[in-house]
Amino acid sequence: MSERFDVIVVGAGPAGNAAAYTLAKAGLSVLQIERGETPGTKNVQGAILYAHALEEVIPDFRSRAPLERQVIEQRMWLMDEGQACTGVSYRDDGFAKEPGNRYTIIRARFDRWFSEEVEKAGAMVINEPTVTGLLKDATGQVVGVKTERAGGEVHADAVILADGVNSLVGQRAGLREDIQLEHAALAVKETLFLSKEIIDERFGVTEGQGVVIEIAGRITHGMVGTGFLYTNKDSIAIGIGCMLGDLSQRAIAPYQLLEGMKRHPMVKPLIAGAEMKEYAAHLIPEGGYKAVPTLYGNGWMLVGDSAGLVNGVHREGSNLAMTSGRLAAETLIELKARGAKFDAKGLAAYKAKLDASFVMKDMKKYADVPGFMHGNPHVLHEYPQLLNTAAREMIRVDGVDKRTKQKRILAEVRAKRSLLGLMGDAVRFWRAFR
Amino acid sequence: MNDVTLPTVNVEQKLFQNRYRVDEARAHIRIRAQDACGRCETKPCLVCCPAACWRLENGTVDVVVDGCLECGTCRVVCTAGNVEWDYPRGGFGILFKFG
Image 1: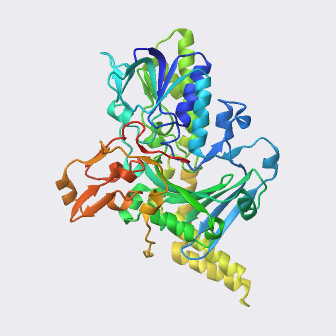
Image 2 (image 1 turned 60 degrees about the vertical axis):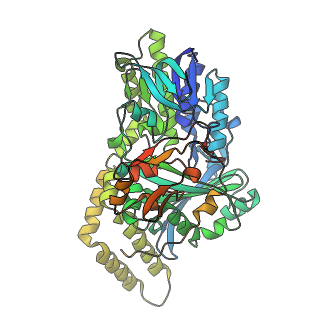
Image 3 (image 1 turned 180 degrees about the vertical axis):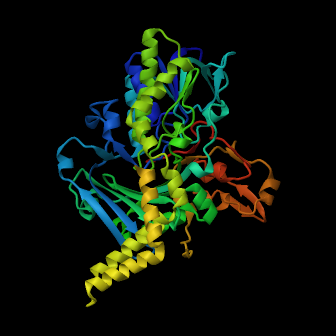
């Protein structure tokens, strides 16, 4: 291909699509290259769509995008090793009346739709060639990409790398290092099919409404991780992710964790009778703010997972991805309008925009959390157990007076954690999360 | 903490539901040097791969990429940097129907 473009976007996931769409809408010439057969075939997500991020790219997406269910209820469960589970839930039927804030989506379907929108906006989208490297000129400025096809070199004034958590293109071009073991989480998930009516009934919702369940505790056997269960229209997404370093050190296979969670008495009845139609796995960058690489240079920018933009505390990634893609695009649009170069000096505005947005503000807020979790794994292990023990003791009516019960609970807590330990946990937790 | 018995899982059965376009001409993941695997005591690849692609056959580590989910786990978890990891050729490999 001898054509030249303003921008090449590598990857057609949420970040890449947001970037390509925004650029095309502004009239820049965009080539987007996706290695999958179609966009979505190489992507994995829970998946929750946070409306705000997409609204800023496609304001009327609700009438166009393939959305599964509008989330009106969030449950958080803390499970112990055996049969017990303590939880909280938040439900607001008011959520159902206003434009949805969160929706469950099926990633492959969603990406395919988003990509169609990108094409309608005027970008050229090519599926299947894999970008194998970047082209640089003598000064080190990125001037295009090369693909695995013979003669597959394409030139552009800037390249946006939206090539995901493994970011091979970025690594090979020397723009970033590989993700480190201590910063990677591995998640496995299954998509289980059930009828709409059964899902409505089991989760206590009416058509089109959905429930999100986040699960933590001993389902990860003392390792740092969480599980999830999301309701789609006629399927359930169920998965569990854990820090890869922990899995490696404990020699536990991810699919064993998933099976354990599926068998838990709280989960099993919800998925009974479902037909498993896909099993997927993906790495998630969970190093937080401290693991974010340099995000731009002469003629290049990183967006989405390849930029390490995931807020693990709130399980947000796709909204950071879309926002970063949009901000990267806006940076280029503004530079082009001024007739300015796409060099590092100009692209610094991308980082500035990220810093001013919730993306970096949230990443910075939780910068110490990965370290805290690594140093205090008992938080996800002991506390759920203690909570369950306390609940069990208080809820059981057996003739023992309540004050004695309370003493028993406190004794158990002190034995497991000690008063000093508890206070220390509280202080460290506050420092890391505030 | 006590280790609980973990369930045995038939991973192949799960992968059977997935859609793949296998590249017969090219395996996208290779072991760089077999002796590095021989020296590795923990071999986390055997346990952590979500598709159970990594096996131990007669004391030798082997990887069969037909069921690969292209997550990158093996590359990241190998402490010897002994995994030559690449994507399959465009359009090949796992093709997620739902993701």
